[in-house]
Each structure stands twice: as C-alpha cells, then as structure tokens.
Length: 210
Image (cartoon, rainbow, N blue to C red; front, side, top):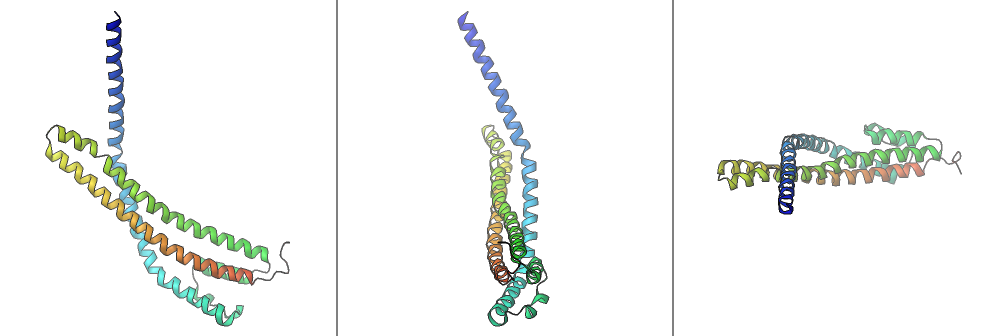
C-alpha cells in the first residue's frame, strides 16, 4: 500500500513538473515575437537619435565656441551671441541673462540640468535595452533549436539558430550606438552646463535669498 502511494506521488509530482515546464516553455516561446518587435523599435530609435546627433553636433559645438569666446573676450550681456543659440541651451541662456536674482538663476540652472539628465537617461536606456533584448532573442530560440536537434530536424535547428545569432548582432549594434551617443551627449551637456553656470554666477545677487 505504501509503495503504491509513493508511486502515485511520484507520478503526480512528475505530471505537475511537466505541466510547469511546458507552461514556461510556452510563455518563453510567446515572448519571441515581442522581443523581435522591440528590437525593431530600438533599432529605429537608435538610427533616429544617431541622425539627430550628427546633424546637431557641429551646430552645438559652434554655439559653445561662440559662448566661450564671449566669456573670454567680452562678458558684456549685450554682446552675448543669443541669435546663434536656438535650442534649450539658447532658451535658458536668455533666461539666465534676464534673471534679476540669484535664486531664479539657480532654479533655471537646475531645470536645464534636469533636461540634460533626461536626455542622457534616454540614451542610457537605449544602450542597456539593446543588448538585453538581443540576449533574450538569443536564448528564447535555443529551446526549439535543441528540440529540433534531438529530433533530427536540422532545418528547424538552423532556422532557430539564425534567429538567435541575428538578434544578438542587432542588440549589440543598438547597444554600441547607445554608448557612443551617451558619450557625445555627455560632453555637450557638460560644456553647456559649465557655460550656464558661469552665467548663473554673474547674475545680480542683490535680491538673492540668504
């Protein structure tokens, strides 16, 4: 009687384990399509950000050079090159020049710093999500590929391995693009914040909060 009970328990345990494993395999296989779709979205986003970065990079460097020359040579608010600044940097530069107290200037500087951090966070997500999604796209097809190998289905094995390697490559490309864009944006943001910090320090302090 005890042997039958133990045997029944083992059979039931195996059945439950098989059900759980099959459920995990089903869920994992169902994640492949969203994973590939996310890779396409990330690839498009990375190419779009790359286009805008290369289009605006030289313009931003020129703006920063003009501000640097102004700081070195003139320092007169009336000669500040506002006409050459057309993005958020120009907007906050204009606001800092017009600020009549230190508290407002510090607030504007903090706002611009938050905008810069948001841009960097967006690029950091791209740099991290790309390889992570590529890794998911690599591991998910491995189960069907091994199943095809066990059953002698070479065509299925080859198809699943092709998906695995392709998603790996695309994910790494997205991550590499993200890393490069983060470095470029970090350099620009650092120089912009340094220029705005100088403008903040030159703001009149007669109404500042002590």
